[in-house]
Length: 238
Image (spheres, one colour):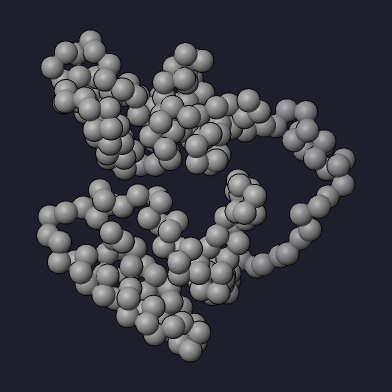
């Protein structure tokens, strides 16, 4: 099920409005009607969190079918971190960039824009310390091919509420507000325990997040990826 909020987000970006000016002729009317219909049907489901039934594969499938975004070099197993935009995707991307530029540059008196080269003399990177001492600890998800900064992932063991010393599983979420991280961890724990057929109730009060860089090698082999819910994380280069 495509969530109500996701449908409304697409409608906001694709229809004409004060913030998003996209010629209506470029957006197929049947597509807008489909989004509106899905949003309306989603709103009728009372008491159901649409994100409980929404999976990343649903988002990817929708984006492909609607011509929004595709993984670059997909025919050759893809290229992590790179994407190609379809007819609707490139229009949406342009709308977002134009709106950001108007908001943070054109509408302010204390900000100006510049456009510089991304290629620089190697001496610049050496003098800035990037070559000798700068590196972000990275981890890769072997299943989804996504890459994360290890210091922006937080993990915690999930204890059983019936047996306080028993670890049922582990959770791993991306850095966010404390409440958002806790909510994401609860949802991931629920999905993992369901897939494992574990009936014990987790003790959400004992979730204690740690930076992934603090995890030992043995713990890393048990900690799930936030994108696959499976222990498929590997350190960069492995």
